[in-house]
Each structure stands twice: as structure tokens, then as C-alpha cells.
Length: 295
Image (tube, rainbow, N blue to C red; front, side, top):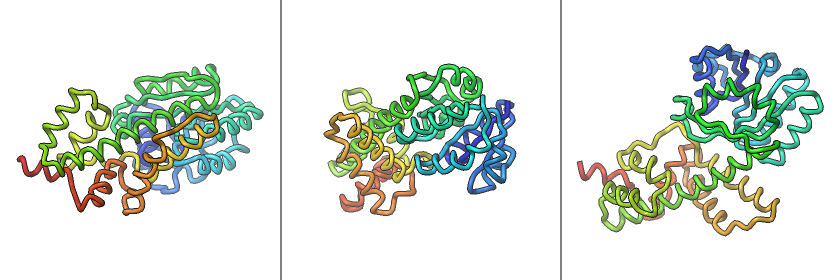
């Protein structure tokens, strides 16, 4: 089948390239026209060209961008097509788009992805899907090229809900670990040894296992989610829990950390650099200097 991809940034571009390498016929569209060639895809000058594909994948920054793209795609879509939204989006907007396109016979599937740039390149993403089981079955061969785990979470919106909950945990562990690593540096601890201790203790988390062993070696794992997008995801989480009446006692503090990073000039940089923002207000602490000192 022909696969259209709208949004060829950090994640969409890697996903498109992975599909091309798997032998799929991929047509891509991005505001930066050069990105289609970078991904090895055929370039679509207009969204109407992407709408001719059998399956359309969206990888966009937020719900307003998704809604704008769907507004332009809608008149060109045909009954029986499937649109898969790989973005992190507001579940209420997702459900509205699902209902709207469903009235035209077009399936809209929300498919939150997790694993980051490295997993996209390796084809080992985890995908959380909301929408009909039949629509998922149609696009499953495409998703299997980029994912090691595909979970059908339930009806429309549940994939994006699962993604928001997961991303909040990701944001919280990153923010807390960054704070602790700055404190560890200020306390005079050997940071590599400290991480080894944490990773064999109850404080272990994704950031201690996968992020900070690289960060203290001055490798920020560039190319992933930015601080601005992490803040956006936390805001979406807070909006969702407010809508459903669930408490969030740690959400505001977590959001404040990534908003601080944005205010200090790190908004468009990878979220791992939140540790530098915390280091800035600690007097200019840089945790990677510890690794250099021990070499």
C-alpha cells in the first residue's frame, strides 16, 4: 500500500525513512520541503497529494496543527481510508476528529508513540492505539515496520490518553532526576558511581538508566522531544485530569521545571537539557564536568 506521512520532523522523518527502508511506497509532506528527500520519500507539494495514499500518518506538534491539517485533507479523503495520528494530542480533539471523519467513512486512529528517536530508527517503538479494531488491523502491517509493541487501548481517544499519562511519568522522572543530579554534583559525589547506586536501588527510572549515563559524558542524545514540547505534553495531561476530575498533586511542579527551561532559553532544545536549566539557577552547575574530571 501507499503510505502518506504528514510531518517529517524528529519522529515523522525517522518513521518515514524506516517505512521506505522496509519497502513501502511513501509520500511525505512537510513545511520544510527538503525533509521528504532526507527521509527517502516522494515529496508531496500539497496535502491533497498525500490524501491519495491508502494510509495517511500524521506526526505533528499539537492538536491545533492536527486539526488544521485534517481541515485541508478532509475533502480529498475517501471512504475506506485510514488516518493514523502518531502525535501527542488532546484526547477530546482526537475524538471529535474521529467522529467527523467517521461520518465520511474515513477511520481516524489515535496512535501515541513512545521510545524516542532511537526506537523510531530501529523500528522498536511502542504504540498505544485508540479506535476501531478493524482500522488497526488495516494499518497493522505499516505499524509493524516501526514498532516492536502495538497495544489496542480501546475506543477513540484512549491511545492519546495512554500517551499523555506515560509522558507525564516520563517528564516527572526526567525533571526529578535532573534536580537530583545537580544536587549530587553540588554534594561532591562521583556522578557515574551515584547513577550506578541509583540504578540498583529504589530510585531507578528511565532517566537514570537511559539518559544520564550519556548526559554525564556530555552526550545529550540530541534529536528527541524538546523542552517546549515536554511542557506542552504536561499541560495536556493537566487539562485531561481536570476534565475527568482526577487530582494531580505533582503536575504543576513538573510543568514549572520545563517552563523554567523555556524561560532560560532551552525551549527548542532537547528536554534532557532541563538539567542545564536547573544547573543555571544553582550557579552554573554542569553535571557532565564530573565525567571529564574523572577521565
